[in-house]
Amino acid sequence: MQEHTNPVPRPVPGPPPGMAPAPQETDPRAGIEEAIAGLDELDDLPPAEHVERFDAVHTELAVALSSIDKV
Figure 1 (cartoon, rainbow, N blue to C red):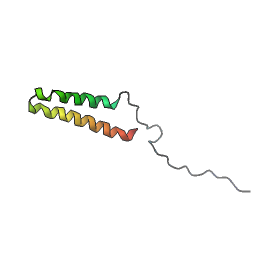
Figure 2: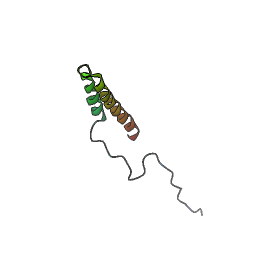
Figure 3: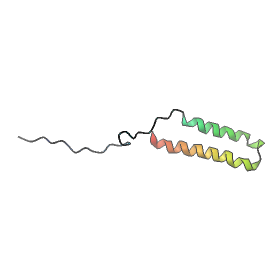
Figure 4: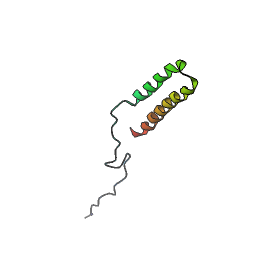
């Protein structure tokens, strides 16, 4: 008679148990849309203040792109 042994557990994709990312409460696109809306006012601002607006858009896009892998 053959003895039945348990197979060795194999790794599964995804975060370790108990380490799942927290669900996002808001749509990540909302921050992007708000930052892009700030670019509408560039004509009324001095060029020195444009950098802050572009940095805000860049930051929101970077956050959105980094969250893609955490789906």
